[in-house]
Image (cartoon, rainbow, N blue to C red; front, side, top):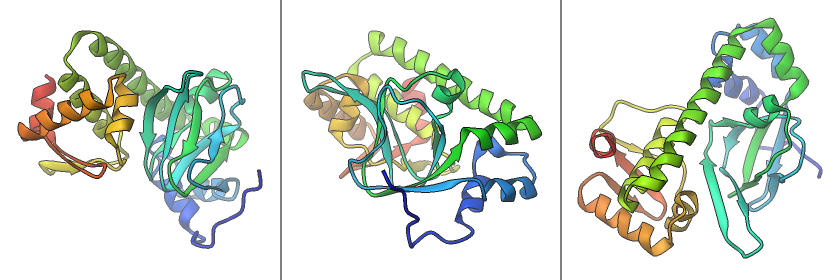
Length: 237
C-alpha cells in the first residue's frame, strides 16, 4: 500500500497532535518537535484496513481525522467490534508492547488520516523521557480495567445496563471530556455497531436505547449519542 500525504494536512499538524497525546504528557516541546520529523501520515479510504489480524505491529497510531473500528468477523458472517476510535485518539500500544501479532482487524469507518509513530521512534522517546512509560502504563491499565469490568457485567446485567455501561466506557476513553451535564460521544455509534460491541441483537439494543432515552439518560439520532453524565453514571452504579 502506498501512503501519501493529504493536501489538507498543515505543517504543524503533527506537532499539534503529538502535543495533545496523553502518552506524551510531560515531554518537552523540543523533543516533540524532533519526534514530529520521524512520524508518517497515512491516509485510508472508508472500509480500508489499517492492519489485519496476524500482522505484526510496527508502531502506534493517532487519529487526526475520521474514525476507525477494531474487531473481528467470523466465518458465519458475524462481527464483533471491541471499540470505535474518533479523532484525537491514540491506539496500537497494547499489541506493540506485548510484541504479539494482532488478533483483531482495524479498518477505517470513513476517510481517515492517521499519524503513525514507528516503534523505534517511540522507544527512543520513552528511553529519553521515562514519563512516557508511566503514561503508557496508566493507559494500558485503564483499558485492562474496563475490559475486566465489561466482561463481568455482560454476564450479570440487563441489556439496558450493558448498553449504558458500554456508552459510559466510551465516554471515559474519549481524549477529552467537559464538565457539562450533557456530553456528545465523538464516535458515531449506530445500533448495529453497539450490538456488535455488547453481543446483543440489534432489535434488543434498539429497545434498550429507547428505554434509556425515555429515562432521560441519553439522546440518540443518526448515530450521534449524547449522554447525561450524572444520570447515566448514577444508573450504572
